[in-house]
Image (cartoon, rainbow, N blue to C red; front, side):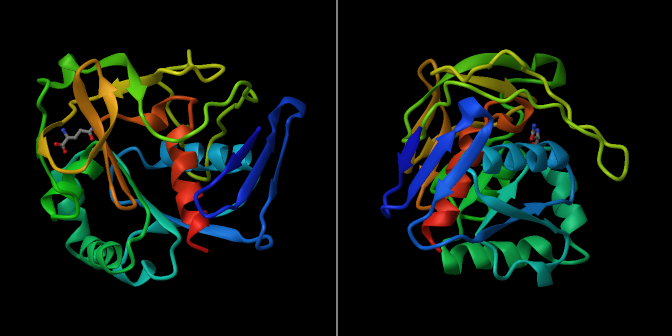
Amino acid sequence: MTLISASGRVWTMNLCEGEAEEQNLSGSFMLRIGLAMLQGARYEHAEALRGAAKELGISLEIVDLRRSDQVSRLDGVVLPGGESTAMKLASSSEMLYEALWSEIEQTDLPVLATCAGAILLCENNLLSASIDRNSYGRQIDSFQAPLQVDMEISVLDSLEATEHSRDEYGHKPLMVWHEAEPESEDFPGVFIRAPRFISFECKAVVFLKDETVGVLEKNRLALTFHPELTRDHRFHRWLLQRAGERR
Ligand code: GLN
């Protein structure tokens, strides 16, 4: 499979043989992606980023973000889902978010924001959207549903089986939805005490029937669901490709 990005960079994937390679017109490089580690589904995002990097055949460094002095020289950033109130509290001592918001604003850093991450983007005026927290109800009202995606991200027709391993702390990423193997046109949406976009002036890109559950503005992709809990890495590939185009 060959992907050609807007900047003309060519990504070649040869996943059938279990190998992926990239032909990068400007030479090889390693992407530095920051992952906000204050609270929430962080390890699952790390695993999804590693999977997406493998699928694109690129080298990746994941920077665990906890402090304000870590946000420079990033190629992209992931804001995980979890509990936005807890995230804000956890950020207050080391001022991570304040530094991140100004970095995103000033450099147009590519962002993948999921669920609580999308709430934080909206609250900090980094997205022309307003959002309603816990809009589908309580935890017990969480649900899964197929979503329609209107973005230029290729769908992989074969996937390597991935076995998630434990990290140094014994944490094993949680997978909620295993059924998307190989990737299908519909995206497997996992909604956990999810917010809802009430109004927005950015581009609607992911849909749950008639409802918009993903929006894109500049380099910022905000999703109200949890793509990192599935084996479909297309949104993580989008982030890596956007990040790579800016090199
Ligand atoms: N309900 C959470 C909040 O308001 C978001 C839920 C999630 O990220 N899964 O912060």
